Amino acid sequence: MRSGPLDAETILTATEDVLRRHGPAKATVLDVARALGVSHASVYRHFPSKAALREAVTRRWLGRARDPLAAVASDTRQAPPERLRTWFTTLFTAKRTLLSEDPELFATYRVLTAEHSSAAADHVTDLIEQLRVIIADGVTSGDFTSPDPTATARTVFAATMAYHHPAHAPEWQTPGSEAALQSICTLLIDGLRPR
Image (cartoon, rainbow, N blue to C red; front, side, top):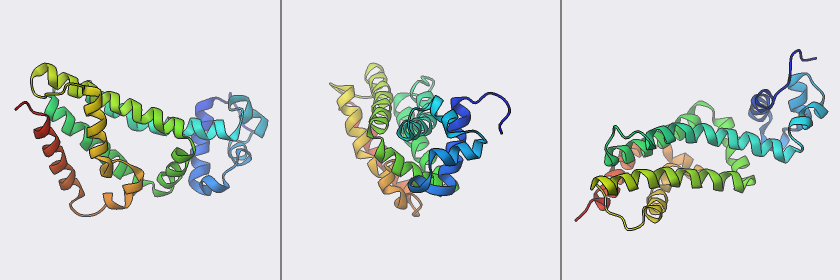
């Protein structure tokens, strides 16, 4: 049996390992409990259901993707056009790295994110808010023009979907994908500049 206290982070880490090994269709709370050397009731004390555990692990994963982007969005040392480019490059690089370094877990999270649409919706809302901050800063500095930075952020996010939505993951490894993203960023930045 396990020694020491069992906390939510330990359970989430074990859940990731179980998901990596068994995949989302076969992984169970009992598998997580076995991996931790505890009873499944111990896991349920922290997460009341399998769905709650899966949602928590999904939110944790999405949070890991969000936090480095938040740092870019709030880094006012870069001018807004460069910050916008850096933000999209950081997002694309993080997604592509996870896909290449841990394809099993990436595939698992594609399934989990689809199952927990509220987690995915909250994540997208966070990302669009980060883009809104960059665009609003650009309006303030005179680098960008936008009557509605929130609407512009949604449009910019949608225009770059091929470089961050998991449905497009097979395309991320193709030669020239990073150069294509840079071209899209240039087009978007030029489109945001005052005339």
